[in-house]
Image (cartoon, rainbow, N blue to C red; front, side):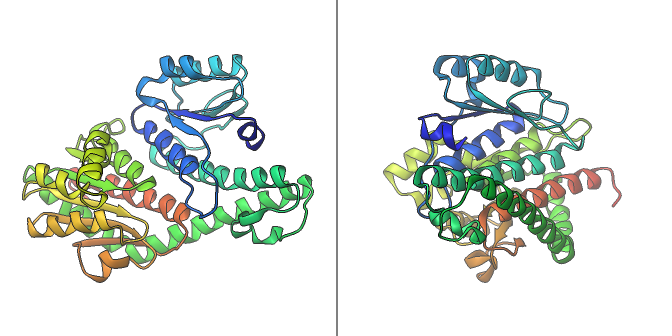
Length: 355
């Protein structure tokens, strides 16, 4: 991938339904890297018009990534096969074939999606290591933050491959540790949040979700998991304010970024609704302002937070804060995905009247 980016290639990603949010997420990771000093790499989400868009803009130097459920998606596979025939590097996530193809290791759609997210986060981190190594030929620059053991001296590629592989295993262990801590410390909070949300839904309420960047894609995914759930699950009314680019850009341009969720909340919120903010920092101003307004309107408020919970937690802006205690955004987002998937499953358990 690093070689293709250096030759002018782009990452083109797509998926259908909830898996389109993985394409959104991987695109924002490459275009807007969370580590200061990392270059913006060209990436696009083509999910809204998958095959026609791909056919129209694909170049042989591009990288094409297709997402789907554990059983795969034949439409996605067909698009990947066409792209590979035109010279592109392809990733089937999952799939039977491609330049790189992952086999689904679980039939649980939520766990499957979490594993794929870990994959593309570590892939993004690793691409920057090799990109700088191949371009500079002498050190890994600011990628030392990701892989401190590489140091500031010239590295041979073979050694980097071995060290990066070890680092990826370390990152997965970090995920396991954070998920275990979340289950130990936050299980009662998650259960209480689910009970409170269920009560609002029984009163005719809906979920109103919002977040920025990667958290926006999580808000979109959570909303889609509600309105297009796995087989056997009930449909839950939900909207994502992060899924409204015309509203977001109009508000950001005409008023300011800090009101992009507040103004939409004013239009949509009813007293029986649930406002759910997702923030890795716990301090995003537009999330804070929307939650402040939600409290004034007596909505139930929930937040998925990182670090120490930030301003949202310190000021008590939500009824149910769920905190992933880490300061590294990819790991926070991966574990937050587990948190909202567990919440979604718990709501399904409550529907059947037993815990």
